[in-house]
Image (cartoon, rainbow, N blue to C red):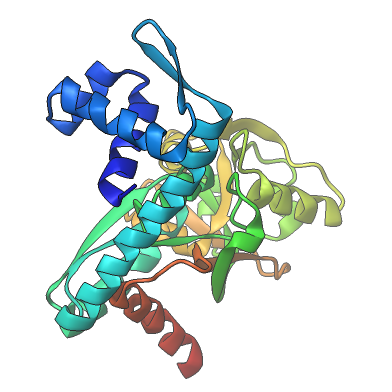
Length: 301
């Protein structure tokens, strides 16, 4: 059994058919079938339940699939580590971010690029659950995100570098003349405003934090719309439908004149931000150096 056979096996398991797997692997069907037969003979087990052309994993096949995925991840990461030692900081660094944290990236990327011009960034945006899958599948190495990180996986799998907290602000339409002359608004001043909430079916902790703070001040927020997209919420604010409460740094991504940001001076509740990566998995030198740029800023404060 070798790495090549395990790679073939995983493609067959994914495609559930030899013909489709052969096309994905750009090889003829008979050699692929032969490699699978040799693997089963060597292990002395049946890996697939063959139902016509369809192939479903047996319990033994499911076990091998889990192990093979881990082995191939370790193999690929070993190759990457060896190349990193030889080549230094270069290649592609893949980073994920929720939209509400993207504003934290440009200054860090600019600074990092000045020092390491051979590193190319690849940025993927998504919610916590999507980014959690990207981490597990090694599509990305790091996530810049709001905390807690609400993925499908146990939080003990992650290492987290906590970044400086971010105060919440109220964002209102410019057309609301009764508020636009103000620079701030007390928390209770939000009680009667129609509010737009940032919330999805899966990521709710940020929303719960805001609701809890409203209740601490003795009122239930008047939420007229829930939305999973910051961009859509801002578009709704622009039309005058309602106001919203967001982390202050989010607003640097929206340099538009149709909205106004108001501080909330009588509350100190903050949005926590951090960098998340997988424990016990190899981090490229580029990824570690990028984390260090954030760590250095924290130490300088």
